[in-house]
Length: 390
Image 1 (cartoon, rainbow, N blue to C red):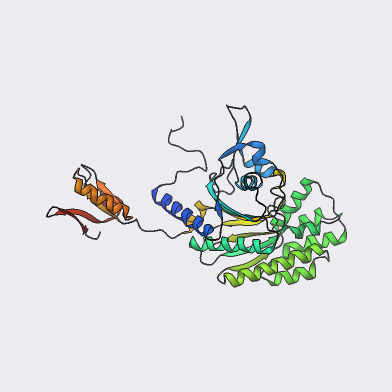
Image 2 (cartoon, rainbow, N blue to C red):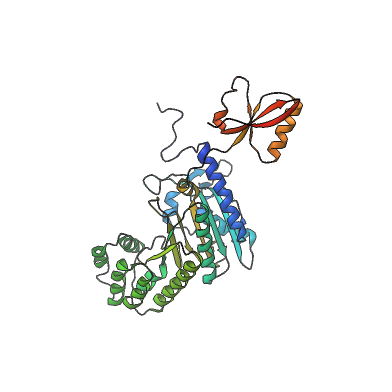
């Protein structure tokens, strides 16, 4: 018999000290987004399945929990990614003609963990800009992403930039079914040159040369110079390379502590992104802690195919990177129904202090709350007194 207190695999409670760190980080990062002009939205945790998955692709379908609505009999889904929901909000509820900057933070659920030790219940924070097709919006999203990581204590992030238009330009004139395209993307991600040669053996020579060059095109800014020489002369290559170069220069000036790199074979999310995409890495994390890019097709299924760019991150992962904080100091108060004491406690709490009553029989448990002061009665008045250091 399974113990009643056991949770499903890759699902965990968040205990007080970690919960406080996550909540403080959530507030801080949403305030940071607000300082850029992003407006907070709160999409629902579940929706009709077709709304959650329309245009989202097979991978998101596999990650989505499904259930039957007992009111309507329709199939509902527990969101695995909030981005389609925010696109729906932009398209149907806000319906603005100009730029919309939206941010959000809430739990998402995955049927399977994304990595060996990952949670199936990330706390997803994201920010998205709708309505502007230019690189200015891409740069604003990258700048906000780096600012958020700085607020989380990530001192020297590494931002890797790529562009799905590189692969699309390489495949011009090549007819591939979806499964074959998935194999190409997987081989590129693994930098598996033999597999790529096998997959491309019947392609036109220009496409074959371009695709076989991509696994070696990773590193610093010099990668873009090599790409200009080694890839074909399709205009899509030049446009993508020039835009990545511009963004790298902007990021370098705005965030000199960040190291900018490129991996032109990294085509993760190929079917979702439409242009520049990026991933940010931090010391101590095995995988990227934040991902984003341009996805101009995200709103098409909702009737508004307008430009969109954004990022998302798991706050639980970001909180793990932060240095542990000492317990918050508090004031210890003896339990009493004394009106004057109660008035003093209310006033201290209104001033932002944490005041903990020592309940009867638990007077010596104040150390649980890191109390550094206590309220004592002197000459009919309640006064603060420092507690001895422990």
